[in-house]
Length: 215
Image 1: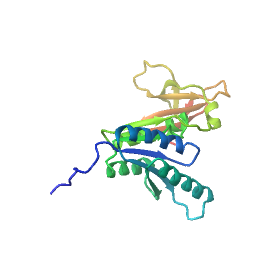
Image 2: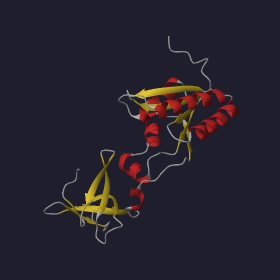
Image 3: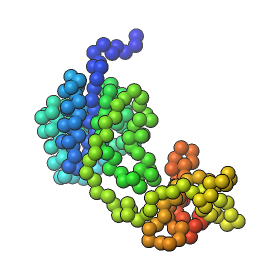
Image 4: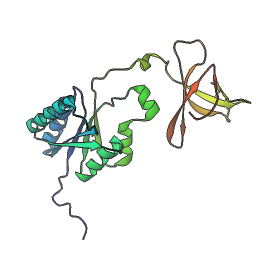
């Protein structure tokens, strides 16, 4: 016989938290949604495996337990040994029949999302028919945010040695991507980012040229 879903609630809320000052804000948002829908509330933190005693981590977990009790939620702390965080979140969502996820704005900066992808997109690619609430949270922007200009569409053209960068969109043989110029130079130095096999590939541009397509 197939698995029965008679006792599975129609709505279930999952709040994803991490270390930092924003856990209560995220939990409170999830609690409000759960209250309005009379839905169970789960709180998930995915932690890296650390065999050493981490006092700050212990303090955070004590605080999370208090918040879970205060907002009538069930706290789950999962140690991540090898899987991607998005995969763990997706697995928990499926296991608990979650219908809505509350998650903080990615701690990755705009640059990191360009280079590595967005965790939210990764979650959405793994689970369907689920609502994701993205809550703006505080974060510190690394210096890289101020090192490059806004990206512009560009193309790589094969030369005798390496590849040169051009902005001529009429060249059908070019490799399309986005070029981010280093603000500290008057030349075409910076990063060229292209898609290959559904992945982002980042290439370093020096004086308008790239030696190899892979780094």
